[in-house]
Length: 228
Image 1 (cartoon, helix red, strand yellow):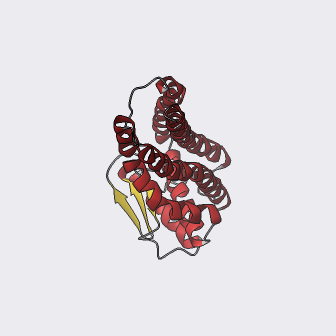
Image 2 (cartoon, helix red, strand yellow; image 1 turned 90 degrees about the horizontal axis):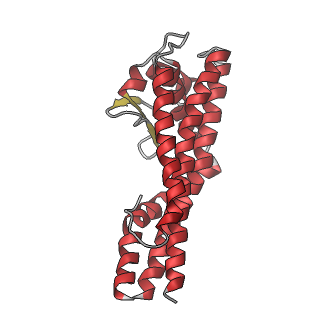
Image 3 (spheres, one colour; image 1 turned 45 degrees about the vertical axis):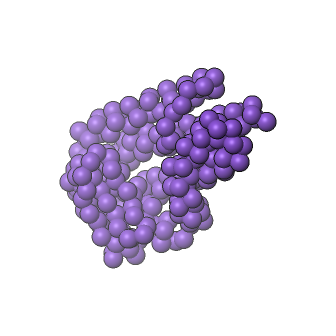
């Protein structure tokens, strides 16, 4: 997310920032709560991920443990599923739910699911846009160069588009994860409900990130209009 700068439109951003802070706190608290609830299967997150991958025809996708907290992700370029140490080694409902969520992304990749493919195609432009949009836009403001303002808006629009597509991709991965955990019997019905709470809390962080990005873009458009 690009850095903040102060102007009269900064107040538009405040509700979204508060939502993001609340969402981050909620996902941490929810994960910690259900990290203390052991899964009845007794399996670790890494073991569940490996079994779900194998059952989904993805036995060649390795599961690796990485550092950090909630740093879990599926790497489509390398076709590697990476789980944070707490999830990979944890035997809790939270660990199993998060691990299965990442398997959901691997299945999206395997099936060439449309939204997943679109997000991957947007990533290069979004990565560049999130880094360069605000510096270029601010340079355009400082030196009164309208074309730089327009380029900044276009670049940041790519980052916003990526955020908008990310939300349904994450929600679908969670839906797939919960269905797999239920049908494969890795979690009992009550535990599936607990895992759902963890994944819903995580989804809120994506909602908040999308809201922040959209309002940032609105700020740029308003400021651009004031220089017309």
